[in-house]
Image 1 (cartoon, rainbow, N blue to C red):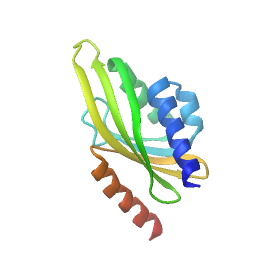
Image 2 (spheres, helix red, strand yellow):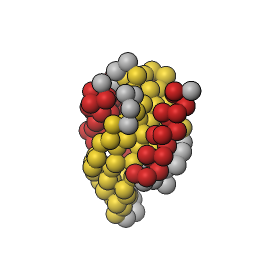
Image 3 (tube, rainbow, N blue to C red):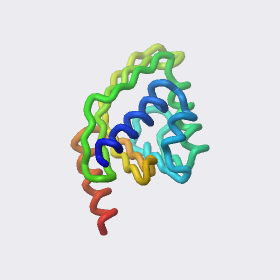
Image 4 (spheres, rainbow, N blue to C red):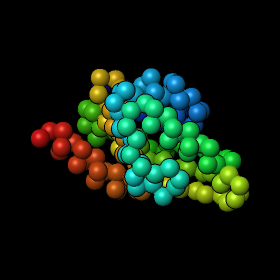
Amino acid sequence: MPQENAEIVRKVFGFGFVDGDLDAALELMDPEGVMDWSDSRAPYSGIFRGHAEIRRAWQGWRDAWDEWSPEIRETIDIDRETVVIVTLIRARGKGSGVPVQARGASVWTVRDGKVAYAKLCQSKAEALEAAAGVSERDAG
């Protein structure tokens, strides 16, 4: 199950952040799913609930950049529902032309074959700590 969940997360990330195929990404997300990007240092930080808000956030992220090249560098299965991905984003600001390179990580919870929750973190260590909290919360 964990490997299947990691594959779902890779697909959602690929469709949503790389390809811009938001319909395909949302097909793999719970309609009530949450993306917590409140720790983002980039445009469009916040907590996005449900398909409509998540779609607007993804579109905003993509529209903020002239160039946008995100990639997954590492995938870590935490437990049967939780996956951490470590990412590298290369981008160039729209209008400003300023190049940006950002390393980060995020925690993803997959239930019944759909992403139910995703949280952006600023580092792998922070994501692993957050993932432990997610696992403990779900167990309790």
